[in-house]
Length: 320
Image: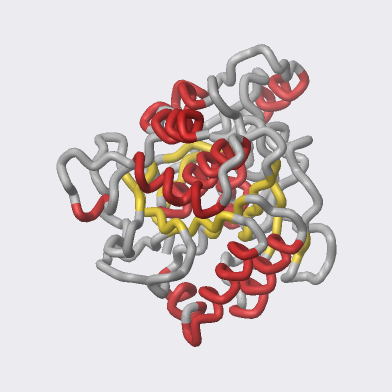
């Protein structure tokens, strides 16, 4: 189960004021609380690429598409839970993941996203309680790949859910299909604090564990997946629905902090979007992210290390 931290307090009145005054040239007022952007060196990477015209599919609980920090960044998606074209987030998790990946940046509203030029494709496969069926999750991955997703984010790191999904290798097959269609698949490692290899060795997926602000492995993060990387995943501030959901029972301000590998994965999806915009194919993106991750203390729980966005885009630029 995801580890949660208290929501960041913000009044509805202030949120409405920020919405009315949104400006593409003004800094985001909550940016100072986003330690993860600096830890990944994302602002420095934006000088080279912002992920323009890249579509990140968030295969999750849906997205609050009218959120002031996400509105206008959404492309058409699908709801496999209700079977319609309105993937509204009734849980909150998918909206939080989406803001990490690609919230409006430097618009004078809320927070900054990891890939300021990317778009979000909401694919709802998880219900209001955060659970989903094997079939719907698999269909969601395939649908996203078939409808133009360049990056597919799987923040499905719930232990029981992942165990169910991997029976028979159905998730591995869907990921392979997405890769063959030209999409990079990024998946959360899970939050059981366990040494595990969740995917078949040859599955083309970037597995992501969670790191802390101190640069250590988060205590809840799974580790041990072959060639896994790590990214910030503790006390991560991002967007949340402005209506009541499981994640917003005490605060509907539109912003809050959550912890988990579910939060680490979309930061790597954002970096994948930057590299996609630079012209790299899925295999090159995976190789570049892995090859530039840093782990100076050789901490096995960090895998190959914490991703370095600045180094990754510079390497891509040099190799092009």
